[in-house]
Amino acid sequence: MRKHALTLAATISLVLTGCTMAPRYERPVAPVPDAWPSGAAYDPAQAGEKTAADLPWREFIRDQKLQKVIEQALANNRDLRSALANIQSARAQYRIQRSDLLPKFDGELSATRQKSLNTFGGIGGANGGRAIENEFYTASVGLSAFEIDLFGRVRSLSNAALQSYLATAEAGRATRISLIAETTSAYLTLAADNSRYELARRTVESAQRTMEVTRKRLEAGVSSRLDVRQAETVYQQARVDLASTTALIAQDRNALELLTGGRIPDELLPAELPENHDWLSEVPAGLSSSVLLARPDVLQAEHQLQSANANIGAARAAFFPRLSLTASKGLASPELSDLFSDGTSVWSVAPNLVLPIFQGGANVANLSYAKAQRDLYVSQYELAIQTAFKEVADALAIRGTIQDQLSAQRALVDAAADSYQLAEARYSKGVDTFLNALDAQRTLYNAEKSLVSARLTASDNVVTLYRVLGGGLAGEE
Image 1: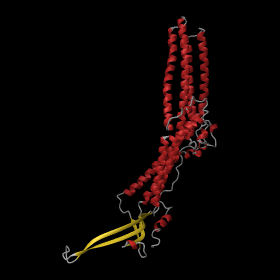
Image 2: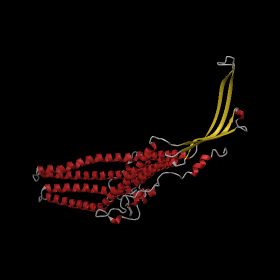
Image 3: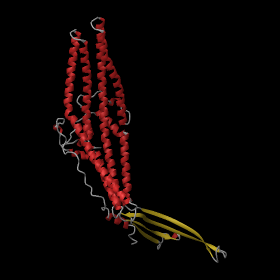
Image 4: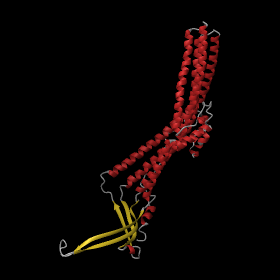
């Protein structure tokens, strides 16, 4: 018994490592259809076997300047740093909890000196006495109050901590994907506002020329003062747009630099929005909605559910006896010089069994709380899947219709441009009123602004699909 006292706890612990009282975990059935929505708003030709998760972000982002901006964001973004710090904190908490599964051995070296007065012949030492000094030295290695995990309480708590750590890790992956998407969207918004600025600048120049021509016609007695004032409305409106867009561009850069965590070199900033989102690759949606189960936020919700499930095991185990063991083996001697000599060996084993008898309903309440938390996380897991399905369905609806919208908007711009040229020519020849030419100019300007917005919507839709489908998970760096 002396020989095996210090290894008894470890042996029992290894035998009982698989025993817990947690309910068997079963993944809830996904409360969404197996296939993506279909109908007039959706394009069935976009489905395929591959998914966005198979597309690394460096392949998704084609533009090299945008790639460098994203690299800066991944290196310096403070939200991502916070997420990584949370992961490390959760990992440390798991390791702390897991350490309770193993015995902890401590070494101790102590010396005790005691002085007592030995009296003779009555109280108070009336007949005299003498002082006695005692010394005692010990050196030992032992474990203190190690819980033998008979009913899996410690194991369940360790499993709960592990699942919490994994949930935090998935939250970090979700933050990374969102950062890539948000940085790309902010870059596209800056490019679109640069396009709007260039459009407003051209319109200011065009409206100024029209206004000057109208003034000359007024001086020649061909046009009225009303024509001059009407021409000025388009000019001033374009000036308003020019000023407001200038402010938006500055704000767009500020937002982008907040995401990247620092100043972005001017040479990496976009000039204008590309015609057909050439900076991005097309995103495959896959054939089945089961791809949503691999989304980091969905996995995060599932790990939280598994953690709550493990906590039920710990709460159940609290109803049963708790056995702990304190043991030590070492050396003891009244003389320090003889401490390591033969015959000074000592050992002790002190099992301790605690049986819960009356806890004032605390154990019952803890179990009820653990079950309620499990039900809560079931609902949150199902909601995470439903939210993910809705996000993908919304993005697919835009993708299924955006090309028709772009085609119609380009045709509208072409028609408005021809109408403006014809109306201006008719006005110059005196066969039509200036109001028709002015209306044609306004229609063209608004159509061109709407085309920029539609192109931004198309590019943003590609980015959104990449994010909501868990883009780049298979190629994470």
